[in-house]
Length: 114
Image (cartoon, rainbow, N blue to C red; front, side, top):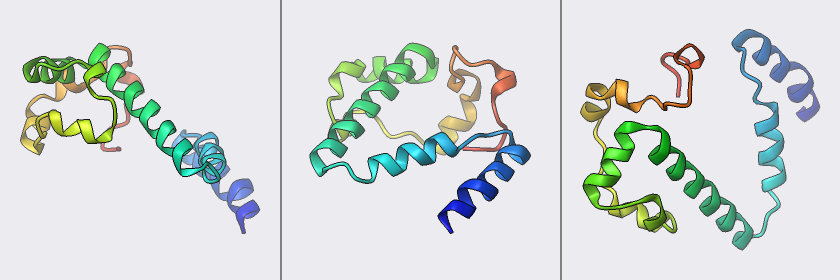
């Protein structure tokens, strides 16, 4: 069943959507066997990369950090995220332009997709 999925369904999804998710699937399969400590380390590293990216490239999030008196370095692990103020749907809707990362082309964005 797994081979059918990887050899048939995923390539069809890529063809129809233009999104190649196979590398993400392979990475998830590799991570599946990490120890708990290694998984936490991976999650922390990726969280820090995401926060650094948001701070450097997304005006809205940079402003949120500044208003909270924080930098990405202040967030060392997932529990530190509580230092950031919560984000509402209304804030997202009213700040859509400043939520687009400066290092992405608008033409590469996918509307109505998360």
